[in-house]
Image 1 (cartoon, rainbow, N blue to C red):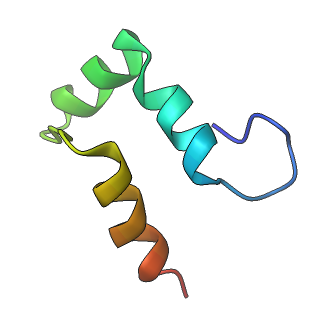
Image 2: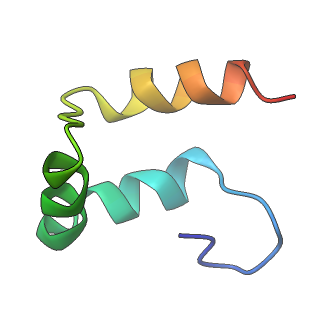
Length: 49
């Protein structure tokens, strides 16, 4: 997911991965159905520790 290989995942990289149907299927197979990519990313990024 870290497309520029800088060791961090930014919102644009996450959105690029989320736009790929195979990644969406991967998440859904694990019970994750993410409708709002930006909101989900902000929630996860906010809890970064």
